[in-house]
Every structure is written in C-alpha cells, then in structure tokens.
Image (cartoon, rainbow, N blue to C red; front, side):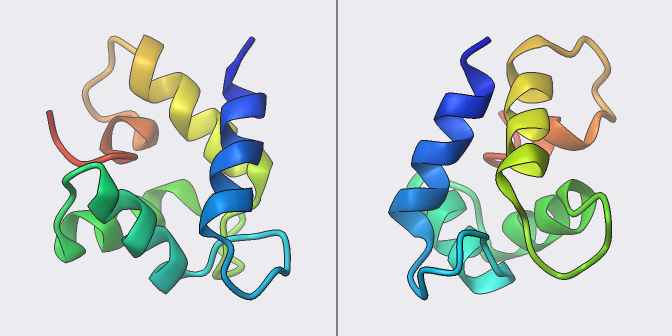
Length: 85
C-alpha cells in the first residue's frame, strides 16, 4: 500500500517546525497546494485528527489518503483530505 509512503513524504515536505507531525497551519498550507480552501482544510483536519491531539501524524494522514482514493463512502474523513472534488 502506498498511502503510508505518501503520508510520510507529505509530512516531510509540509512539516515546517520539524517535529514529525502536521499542525493545523502546516496542514492548511499543504491542502492549499491541492486547491483546498482554508475552511476546507480546517474541516478536513478536524476529521483526520482521529486522536484529537491537535496534530496529524503519518498514520492519520495515511488513513485519510487511503480513504480519499478508495472509499466509496462520501462521508469518510479522508474524502476531505485534499478538498472536495
């Protein structure tokens, strides 16, 4: 499965403070590169942050990426990962 590798790469690129996770601002900048608005990014972040600790780790992001590309459920959290299609 490619989602964990993709998530790791995205975190490496977007993690400005180098702590290995994405905070809401870092995720918003990443999502904006894919065309998501600030509001869409905030909504996606809230759904992707499964443990509600205020950051996205690679596991949470990998799950979101997997859902984005494979889930038939339009309400799956990952379907907002990069904005609405």
